Length: 109
Length: 115
Image 1: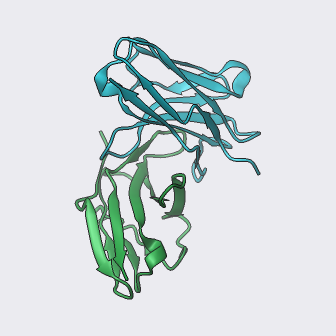
Image 2 (image 1 turned 60 degrees about the vertical axis):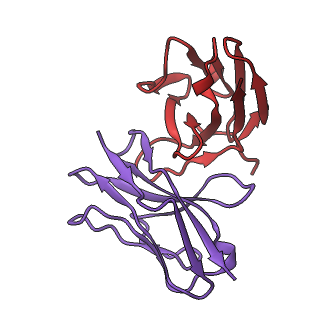
């Protein structure tokens, strides 16, 4: 079965420092990868997906099929980036989404 | 547009009691999902509906959990009888469809505590 691994439960960085939230997956095919975010007291929401290849709120993520990774990166962390981040995978259309355990990002002022 | 609505927001029950959760998806969304999120874990899909038909319920504990989506709109998720390990946040989500590239929109969740 497919699996999504987020090795860090908590990542603390100083404001202005670079951020990298790690995500690895186990699947040999071509999955659809997502990053979801949940800010304090807000709903879980989609941040970005690999097929869009876009930057959202300064965040980018590149799918590396060789390393089966989809790390989330931002060059300069901001306080408002503090939130829970979940990496998720879907094997293809009409398939269920599998979530990782999440990483809490804490940006220190 | 109005988002996914869920009620109640919080529920405390004793083990072996029954509980039901309600979800109203975004208007026009054909696909509806119920997730269970245990503290410290990511959401786990319990059941996925396409209109009023079940697409995936492989992770639904069918001996105690049931869900329905009458008329392809609102949905209810029921637990009977509840166990301590059912304490979790139950999330409802909806999407226009379930094909490649579809975005899921989540509700605020129902936090269940089983004592």
